[in-house]
Image 1 (cartoon, one colour):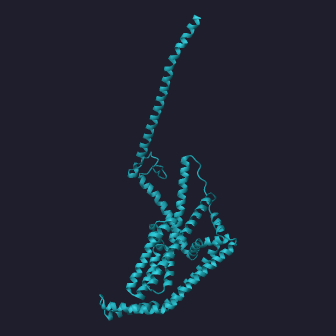
Image 2: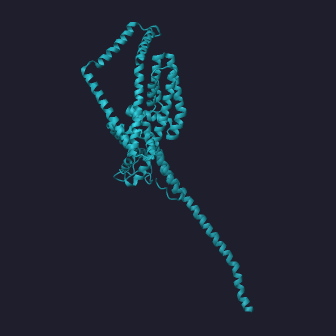
Image 3: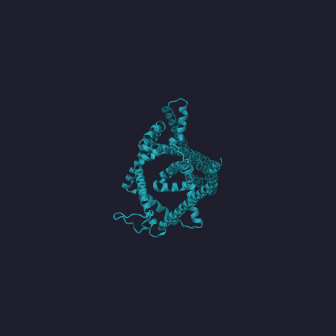
Length: 443
């Protein structure tokens, strides 16, 4: 009994001695982990400093040969003594030159085949405007071919009726307007004699004779007349051909638009078809929104300017309204430029004071468009800044004249919608990857 107690005694005494050994091991493990963490932080700091040293060439110093940013010279494999900024600028430069050359080639081809591309573009605008009417008629269980034909006939009838009314008004008021033009020119001559210019009759007659002689020389030669008649005939032929292309293209865009777009999508590689289809549909939605907003703005401009002209007693009110409506399809500047025609008519028919009031009315309508309609419609639906619209119109006029000014803004709206959609999708993919989730399915 005593022996057993004596044998168990040392074992019981050994237990307290094992506790300090275990605590020391834990402390030693913690110190090792702390030292490892400190070493990792030092290694990261050294790597960041090395990367910063490698990038010093951006400011003009040569990039070290050991840097991963150093360009490798072709042939011998030695890095050139070229700053990193120059190398980066050169890489961007030749790529931008290739993109610019490709864009120029595309623009040249579109201009060369303008007798086809311009009517197709106009047909797309018309189809974007009237397709909702075709869809609503088809929803009444009417065949789509018949619904398309009904909308086309109604649209052509509306255009012909409007032109007929304008022609009748011009024909009935033309003689009166011509008389007022002659009287206005006579008033200008009298003002030139008695006003601050103080011109003599001899000087006025000399200028009039010079202008008359220039006009006669312009059309005196038989070759010039033949050339101008030939140019007129060619222009009329192109206009008629373009009209029929617009007519038939619009019909088939409305009737078989889905099939045509499916065929276009199949021209892309398989792995890009889904993205191309989505981008095309986004661009179509943006084009539809642009056309609807433009029609509403054009209608407001035409009604406003025509109302001012009617209140002032200016002739050719319906013709002025039609011209302003068509001109307003060039946003911001189109309605103002066409409204100046109303000011000119007011100047000839009613005198300078009425013309000034007419000009004030045109400016007031433009202010309503610029500060209310454009921000609400173009900014909300199309998401285009007014500065972008102005720059697009200027570029379109430079490249293709009036047709370029007409098509520049819808093209810009479509490109802007595609870029915004692609950027939002790329951001969504990056966010999903950062969160560890699967990227969203396209569509």
